[in-house]
Image 1 (cartoon, helix red, strand yellow):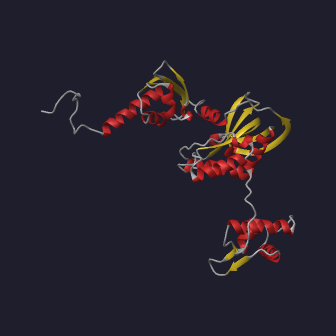
Image 2: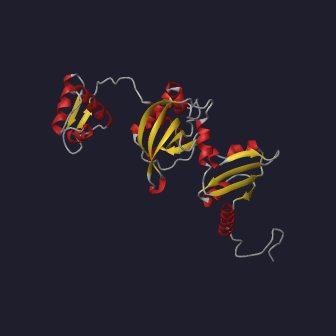
Image 3: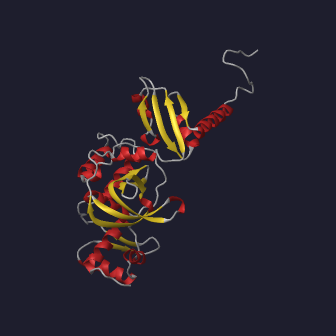
Amino acid sequence: MRDDLSPTARALQALEAIQNTPGITAERLGRRLGVSDRAARRYVAILREAGVPIDAVSGPRGGYRIGRGLRLPPLMLTAAEATGLVMAVLEGHPGAADADDLVGGGLAKILRALPRQVAEPIRLRRGPAKAPAAVRHETVTELIAACEATRTLELGYQAGGGGPERTMRVDPWAVVLRHSRWYLLAWSHQADAVRVLRVDRVTAVLSTPRTFTPPPDLDALRTLEEHLSQHWTHEVDVLLHAPLTEAARWLPRSLGRIEADGDDRTRLRATTDNPRWYARQLAALPMLFEVVGGDDLRAAVVALSEQLARAAPHNGVRGRGPGRRRP
């Protein structure tokens, strides 16, 4: 196998691999470094000669481990690693949004250490988790770096549903992790409009010499969530019987845009690709609502109401009004 890096650089890579995977064998270490087993053992020997205590345990559960007495250097995270760590904990820890919470206080320190362009899209709030999509670490790092440098990119992008790959020229505004999925919020030069791109579908990242000026006072998370509620197949137009402030407390922004409709009512407008799912979200709201527009959503709400009615039969007695008594 070729070993283009210096022995010192490879030895440091070996140290990181052993730290991250205690019990790693020479064979696995070699695969991790892209070298032979023999070369991997040589790098372990270099570390030992430098005074790094590395223990080797034989047997089926054996392998290399860092021995006692090693003082680790200060923790260093890339912007992508720190962003991913913060977002993942926010979605999984109930007190992560509270600076007085032990975990929340730690996250606040990480946010203060991040560059402003990276920390801005992060909000100390939680949301339901989805199954995470596979994303290359290098891709996230490149996109975050482009956001920080305000540099226009040429992206290779694979459309959903196995569609053709296309090339896009974009101004990257922010990389956001929302509901365990990475998104790139960007301005598309071809569409001349804001676009939200799934990072797991980005196949190539090419930096260009051109720079751009991001929009002032950009609320990346709000823009992302509002965009995710639009541009789908089925119309959503709902009248909520609650004032705007009350509706905003219960409605995630990803469900749509809301605006006041008088003093005690709120209008919700959006689109969806799954009316049945949307009907269930509406049914969970602690307020009355009316479907004003969207035939598919209206049909889904009716179907859900009939399903709920069948789930709670009146002991087999039908047609009894609320004022009727049993004989």
